[in-house]
Length: 214
Image 1: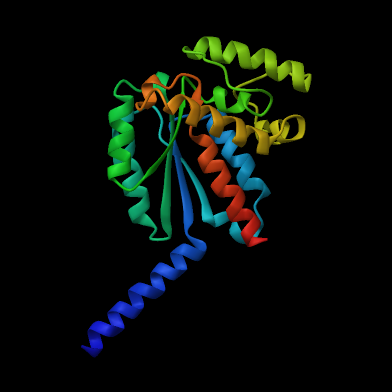
Image 2: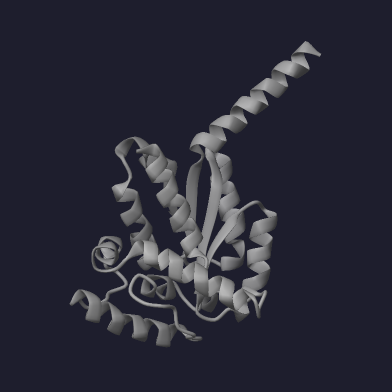
């Protein structure tokens, strides 16, 4: 019994550590925009916490295997308990199924419908019902230039800084949350939730973590 009690205590201690300082692993299939965006967040994190946020790129492979890839990365480091997969509807055939499979694997998904630019747009304005990635990107290019005076490039390394300087991150979270809950009243499947994104949930979590650690 004593040994069992000690094991229980150890498990309890591990759980407390996780709740206090669990690390985040973000896996995205995009080598440019999404990667640069989250690297921007990582750059503002205090040096002592940078290892608590790791970004892995899963590209040029079948997206249906991204969960297996994330699981392998998680198993390499026991600190990673908050796993986030970031991908767009336009890149996934079985969009809804993949999201459900990720949840069953204890992973979170920061999905965007139709693409990541719908989240970036929320820094400047309310999210529109745009169903195609091309139209979404074209619309965001104009919004971005109107608000920053710069031409939007998917390879822009300072995209996060520019968005925060010229837009409003708190408003972005608020707008995205409002649109998500509004559309969810009529549609339960992410593939049908045009102009929505759950990336705001991940960004909000990271912001809270950073603030708590300051």
